[in-house]
Image (cartoon, rainbow, N blue to C red; front, side, top):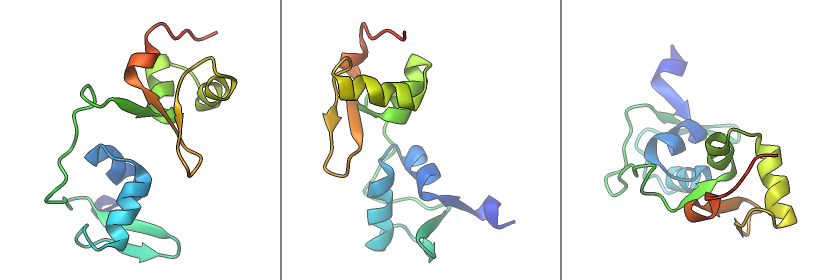
Length: 112
């Protein structure tokens, strides 16, 4: 099946320990061998690797996405975004409107 051979940019990003937009950039640059574009979406072979990109150990990463933060805090992504926007949780807003949360800022964070 096709689903067994290819993965989405989101799945590939998780596997490589990188942001989804970075994986899309690698696809556009042709740095992910075998990546194909169907409509607006990229599909990457499950066995594809990037020579100069090594998967990063999750514990070593300093910054987390909203999704990763929600998983660690065992809450919803919406709740994390609301806490970031209200200033109750410190984070960095990226130009493309995504948030990153420094791992150290999660110490003491409480879910209401």
